[in-house]
Image (tube, rainbow, N blue to C red; front, side, top):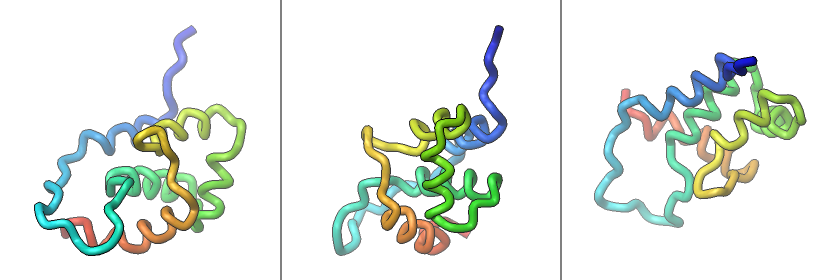
Length: 101
């Protein structure tokens, strides 16, 4: 039996194919970013489709043992690490400032 990924998993994986602006050559002040804006956009797609309005509900959804969250967890991590709740909150608030119009 062939097992197809869900539509949500397909949409999240399609974010990787979107054209993305180049990283700025001059780094801003503060701690360097560990997670890309692309990862935050993937999380935003999941939150919009699943109607998860807070980061807490988003993380609670990903902690479930159901097949869909298990397929999404690897897509929402970078460098073998998963962002903390506070990182998700900060980056989702700052996302509109970083994306092109």
